[in-house]
Image (cartoon, rainbow, N blue to C red; front, side, top):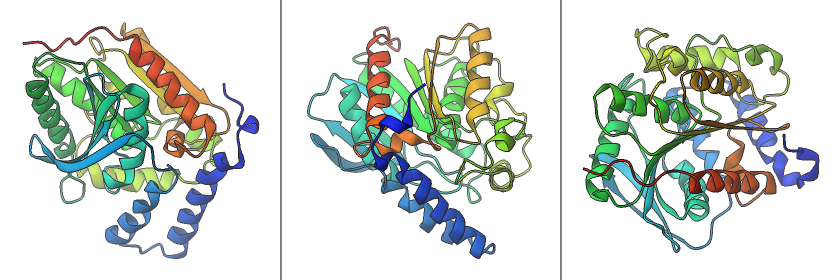
Length: 309
């Protein structure tokens, strides 16, 4: 594990940001979805602006997106799904993290604005992920690897999109990156309780409310909603991480166990004392930059593109 005590005070930026969000939400339990979306737009704040990256806005596969293009580009592409409990968050909120990831991987990162619940509940976001992967595969034409990544609910979508592609008999991404993925729609992870005093953002009531909104009557054990219930055989290599202070730690550790049992190549990283989606501190805290360095080292071990037609 990493030792947060060796990191600058900026490593605690998330603790304070999340605690501020919690205070605002608790002070007004009748917040509308629009209010919550406004709060979570602040998720852009932890990451500092990366250097050597240019951005453009557009769409791919009919899905709006922000394209982060590094100066040093290997030709690989990463489709990135932002977090936000399937209901809030945006590509803009992950633009800077996408830029840092692009620099570390020397790959274009496409941060997608998939459809959100309650307007577009399960499985709309997965359908958007599939559309993006298909479009990237067509554009790549066998040149360069295609990965899919995401954080929190976006980590769920990265895995679920890959499962959907497998079930459709279509080529899969060459790798999956999941930062603090929220996977268990039944909320059975023990760290929801054991990390209740250390996680300054995520709690059981929040998870239950967001899951109900996202599922809109769908089963919480549907494998595409709850990848812990899926047959994970055949998935490409996965890099998954979490902070040891977060309520969703159990989702990461249980996924790694289930995936390895299914024969999946899994690399797991747990950062001591860190909060939910700690890599979004990229550029601000060494612990986040070091983590992206580990993701880059893992990325270099992946096989050449597997999606050639």
